[in-house]
Image (cartoon, rainbow, N blue to C red; front, side, top):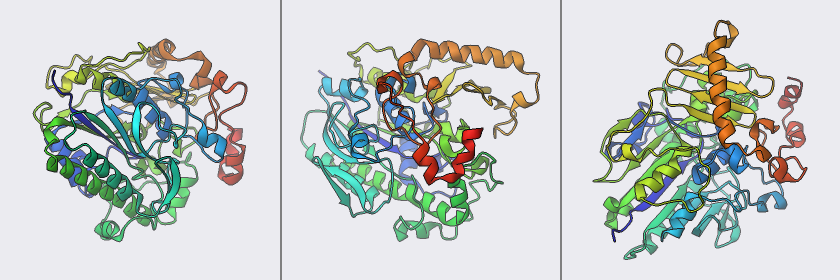
Length: 478
């Protein structure tokens, strides 16, 4: 029986597709990720399923959309009860499928899908961040079930744990899956990163990011960054470069162990990010109403498997994170045992260098609470339930998404057509018990189970958040 390849899955946090050298950014220093692209395949149009971390990660792992798995916003863990809530309990994931088929599954880094202190979803090795972000020094981490403060730079701590796990796999016949989940380049950016990396950008002009007037719908983060935009840019770029150095060490370890050619390496991000793009800093919840701009929904995606995946290849197919689970299992010739109703399609043929049976107008769907998006090759339509404002962009003539065609009229027929396609698609997959279009999600964090699963208790209370962030108060009146 042919031995299955090992898998190293590396995921960054809040990383825009534009923030890598292999994507055309000539200012950022990312040689190891660029090398992965040179030795593997880079996807130019890979989209998250929700432009915020927890639902995006849950969709990657389960192959389902937020309105199927019930995670609609980033998960708050302000108290012990919230921290212990296992949002994915009873759900099936590709890591469960891998474990069922003999893989040893390991987590090093960020989980942020509930009950971070509990080993779950087929994993056995579990080194996890308690929360979704926070300081890079003194990060709350679980090691062997014990919560402690990690005094090392957390990017290095995550890398070191991944390397230690790899050392345990020497001379082992059992294939492994290693999930390396960095918190980089998530905030904070000021005074949180080693000088050896921030010094690399002390003279950088940062011409690779726009410097635009403030977006009128921006929330507090944009205003905070404006107090020291350059310092925050240095921190963001330095966080990427520090993570890249860690990835280099992991690649070096695979080579040292002699298993680089037997290992499938995937690099991606949970959701996109804007560093001044459109006039704001952040992701889908960087504005209110929540946004679905390209910078928020498009993420880097690179796959390397020497001798199996064409080196230096670039694929422009429109694919989504909900396609990842069927693609991975197809590539490994494995089957999900739960027979779930998943919307994704496998793009494994593209990884093999074979013709990829895609339609010219492949449709990508996305959702963030009561906001849903349909994106084809040319047009993108965003529906906001129940009141709008809705948006329609011609990405061919307006790639910067500056002209909402619905503001000028004359596109009613196209809007009707795209709205029908969007709602028809979602109707096939949404679980009405936890339908995101009915959830009061506005980006302040989820505090409990969604919809009927919450047994009458809303999972999206925002009163405390508004008290802490008075700039949000007017939005209750919008």
